[in-house]
Length: 173
Ligand SMILES: [Cu+2]
Image (cartoon, rainbow, N blue to C red; front, side, top):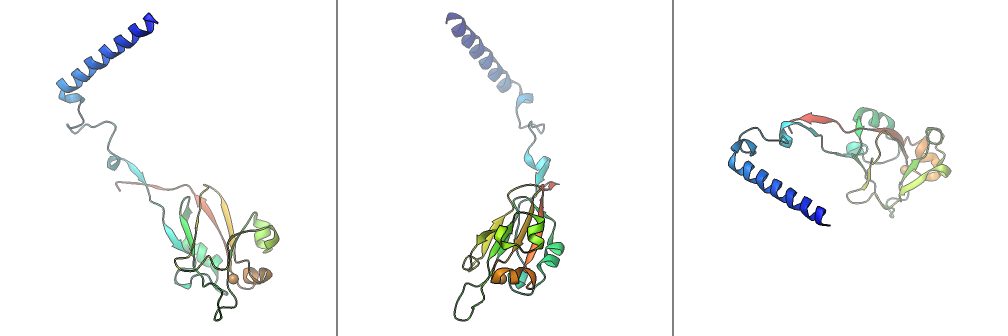
């Protein structure tokens, strides 16, 4: 007990001496142009995540080639967000859409929706759209519309895959 108390005393004395030294000697300060650790602007910074509207101005609809779109629009990085925009069901819209994620390449290739997970229902794409963030690095994501028993996925070309690359870095940002 006495030893511990003594140790704490010694540490307190050393700390106060160091503080005194840092105040007395300007070389210890960060105001002399030799700051350590370096300010973030001095080194590389992560490129901030982006939001991408799936299909661009086409939004999410039957017949647009989303596979080609994904190819042109990549690469995608982890924490980027895909935004699916589509109208909810109404008298004027009797063939709405949705968003499903397949667990594997083969279920995606076959538009096997029984194995897929619905991530957005027919109403979720309204307004600002449904946002899906690519939250895992080095993951293949397989998306499709789940409507009409796979007809939108296969014939309607409403499917695409992306891989979430590690976020890039840039100097000075
Ligand atoms: Cu659809």
